[in-house]
Image (cartoon, rainbow, N blue to C red; front, side):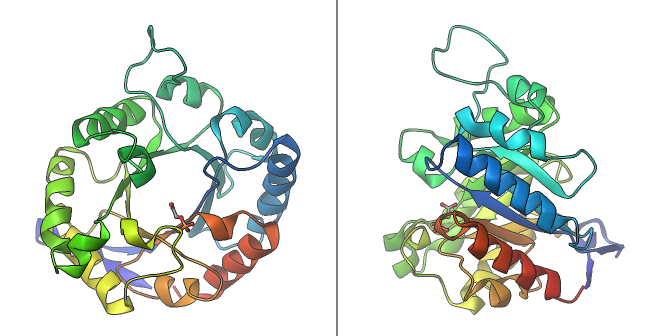
Length: 259
Ligand code: PGA
């Protein structure tokens, strides 16, 4: 599929659409599981089209166990689930973007709702995103509304607050993940038309070139329909990404999509 990617700038360029499948393991796994998973997914991605990118985000302490399976230049990469905004310093227990880069990490999830629930605010999310970009990592910046906002029809204005700050970032340097908080780990998703509408709204504000992924209860049964939406550039997958078989099945579905 070829999408107009530069509408915001008044002319239409054509680029093949890149799709991302990001496996967010949250606080799950051990060295053996991460090593086996990295090997299996790296092998699977050898036959995937170059327009499909897969990013494996294990817990911080397991990044190195996943890393040896990744060859540079393939479309399989390792991502972290968080970083600190400062390059170094007296921040006990924290990890800087530069340290992740040094380890061979290429992506970092920033501002996941589970971290926002631990007190991470928009200003910190922005500082972390800038720090990731400065270290040549690609931040995957998460946004999304709580259930009561969704039920009151307030999704667009809630997202506006979260994305207004992002206007200052170069759209070539980050990915955005739209994850309705109520859909995460709940087996509930918005209707396809609602996912489309939210993604279109985000692109109206930030420009059509920003890749927007969907996250929240993505699984083998719904990923095909979600990825087929023209506004959706991929999926951020939690629970359903934990098993090799289910992740491989989702990669297969993504590989079969046109364009
Ligand atoms: P889920 O999690 O797929 O288990 O809903 C998604 C996420 O939190 O990124």
